[in-house]
Length: 195
Length: 190
Image 1 (spheres, each protein chain N blue to C red):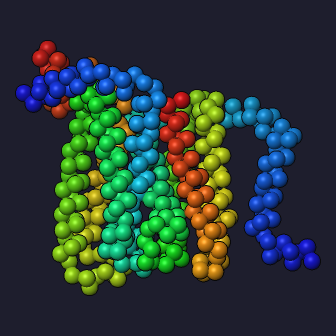
Image 2 (image 1 turned 120 degrees about the vertical axis):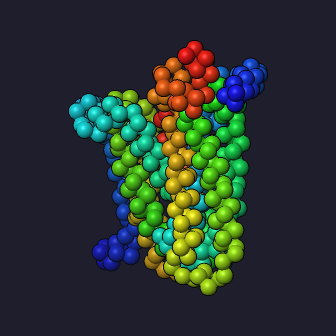
Image 3 (image 1 turned 180 degrees about the vertical axis):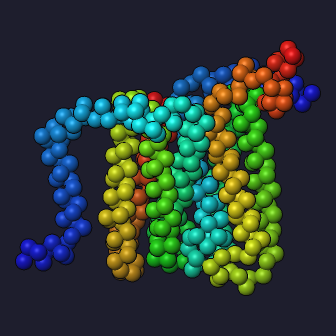
């Protein structure tokens, strides 16, 4: 009976598990005890790794990778806006939302991979600084939430059935949540530069 | 001559109260710059989706002109916000920008990108509709899309380079570079 229940509500059960895990991590102060042990890794990333070396030594390479990071974020923004504004019924109303969702997801995945790879390079060059910035950790959390939301909640739900069979309010909530999360990722990223 | 005129105009702008207010206010500058960069997601995000569709990389099952037509409005809104914030950013630090090689290259690339967009748009409207449902656009439009992608990547990269000081006037000794960057004082001292 339990397995039957879990198979029907796998996504919901997964979400409850993640929320419960976060609560437990905070309750047992796991996060605060893990945080100091991450400092040696960040110091190694800046001073001993080859990406840290490249970032510190060659400013032009660092700036070029930053530009690639910005472009990949712009493409992520483009795919997210096109998909979510279609779900909200603002853009491309005459094209089925299923077509838009499927047609842009591959591009989103490639852009996200490039953004993460270039983001690691950018963080490595200033690893000893970003370690102490709360806005950096908020960005990492938002990125994690955004990726999990996209790959474990939004895409599985949108691909599971025709969108006409899904409650329109669920679609709207999905779209607004998605825009909000990815905007937070981009905005916190920009704010790292000001901190 | 042109460099002297540009510098004089920049110095006139920099002496204005509003220019100093924009640059001295911590939040005004940060909000302007953040808005300028974040609007990339609307303007360049939409533009790249259109260009990618021409190349058959996204939404190959949807008519290319439909995508271009429907994304035109959000793209223009994004570009208008970018231009307003961009002008204000230049107004806040006019001398620094006028004497920046990267800013100058960025402006040239912007002009080229708009000429390309105009040519691309004219070609798209002139082309017959037979290719609309094809996976990729005709060669002329694909070329236009690749040029557009390259030029806008260049614009973003140059914008990113502006804060770096590798070729700032006091660091350059090459005459051609000094002229290209508009370093009037350094050129006069030679």
